[in-house]
Length: 354
Image (tube, rainbow, N blue to C red; front, side):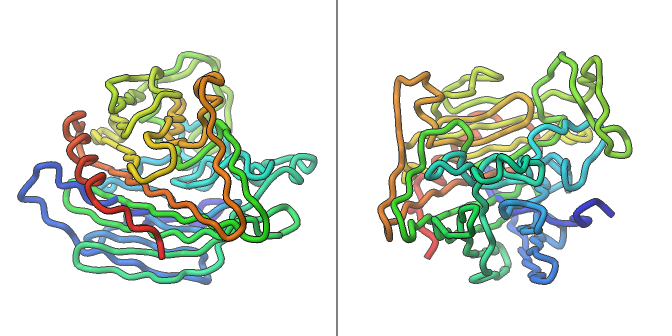
């Protein structure tokens, strides 16, 4: 058993992309609701894909872990299920999540159990309130939830309504996330900030090779200093819709980003797709070599050295909606494959969570 609980199966679904495979067949999606366990498990074709979880040890709900159609876990296990040779930085990077680093001066991004007492008055928490709907189907499943973004005194700043749509076939897994945020009793300002917005933390093998000393987990999950970084099996590569690669993608705009690599000898591609309906499209990318993979449409000034700015303001009762897609594909996809998937996604009418 892990320190939290053994997430033996699940991770959130990512919407199925056939990517030209006419023979691909969608598989049945099952959602297993376990309110007492604070989780909803998602299975595709009878195999664990992901779980929507809201344990008391986290400061936000998240999808954890994420698996490919082959069952390969593509997200970092630390801090919930640490595996050997994982970094132990940024304990708030768990699974696949959405939040922001400066909302009316409160930091929702960096909050975790590791925050020192003197920092806690500056942190915000996203609290799961209820499951609105959870249903499976022969080729698609969906989960709709409501959460609240709250201040340290438990006053709610924002109401969130999110719909996840899950699909998959023998070669792919897909998640569409549509999130509507509504300001409650006061004006809410998402101030331009680097620490945002829709992100995931990937497995060690999908990081870019790194040659400096680091602290990694040993075989028992214990943090252990490493004087020389062991890059055995580490070979991730970012490629943006604009043709940039590696560390050069950070802070640039693009309609999509892909990350390719090999995990446990299993070639895999993860892609994030921005939707043209989203504020300040196309998004900036907070994609780092150490394994953070995030779309950040709300970080213009920091990511452009002040050349552009964008603060998103919601008056009381007003809303904004974001829609993203995540693809997990068997094998090493080509940019043309992801562009085809993006065009299909962008051509669909973005449906806000009701």
